Image (cartoon, rainbow, N blue to C red; front, top):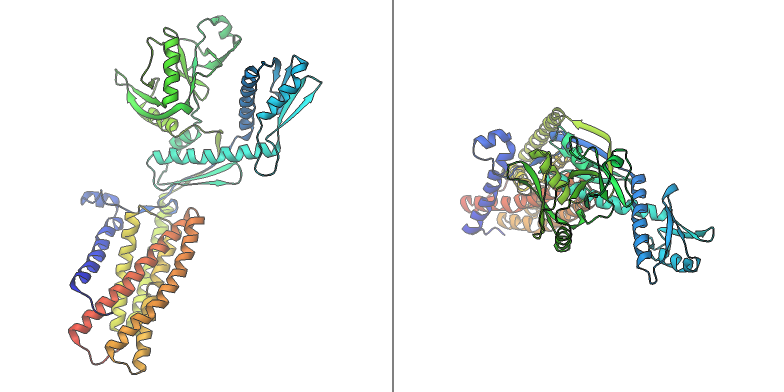
Length: 532
């Protein structure tokens, strides 16, 4: 137990000194670290409660989601009835009152139409309920109504996707450790440390990023379009301000390709060095885009984002490479944000900000100051207690505590972890409990000496027997920390991270490091008395 070979002593000191070196950048202002050439070294991130930042609460527009579901079902019914063999003739389609209804012109096809409509519904969970209710009214009209269970399931799936899309967009901004969690059935909480102006963040999060490519109706009467009247099979889409086509553009309803076929979007520049967005389609999307451009040379197609025309270029030649560019009145920042929104995916439901708070850095500075004071008081109290109670062995324990602090900071920096106010509480707790192992070891050594054992034998047995208890106690401690890490979020996870790192580092410093110091002292001094 007390035999430490030179290579082992070297390895222990190397780990500890590396920990001290890696923790130094986190202990000084970032500007100072950069001036000393330490700007590239890993640093601990500060959470929202320490560095300040933005707090947003987003709410989903569930009414809009219900309209989207009805519109999708309308398209599905039209397609499936047309594909039926023989085709089922339907008409007088209505989406009023939150339901879809249509007329079956040939009463002999009513049963087939009902079966086809029911085939488009799905079971919700294991309850046996369907997401749509299908019934016949007035003998020839089929009415499809979303069920309560179906609406709830649709909202839940949309919110799961929306949460991931928001996370991708914020992470793409380069922010550090944002907190993004669902609250209730239709809300998302977003906290971004260090961001004092959330204007750009709100614009990015709120962008649905629904990209569609549709053919422009070249035969549409400009006079009718100016009056807000769309030709049959068309829809009117707002143009960007100052467009030569006027305020509205007539496009075909059919989507020739959508943002679902995108696999990448990046900031680019055109021949005049103006910012644009370069998009890349997947294999299927590239084939569709190539086919459409081959079939429509010298015609125009519109790129529509969230219901507004971005641009409507002319197809001069087939575009076969699977890539395209979106041009418009972009700045570098707006083009970058659009690229982020497109490649992170479209939001399945519109989100609106219902609560916004900005936490100033002054509050964080006060929290850090209070945490530092608490840490200093805890450290001084522990150091004084160990010195008075255990003498030389107390000095070893205190060295272990100090090095433990540096190791914790170093590991957190390497892991790019975020320190929150609860994390500081975990830090103070770690300092207070870091000497638990040394207390157990020292008391066991005392006990062995009282039994009349020799000094070396007492120390060996003290470390050996106490190590079992230390391992079991810290294992239980670590299990609690892991549960908080896995099931918790935000500040709870911050506390758990510091706690788990502290458990591992304190065992190393309090047991291995102090045992090495004790072994060296015994080899050098060969003591005949042990004051502990």
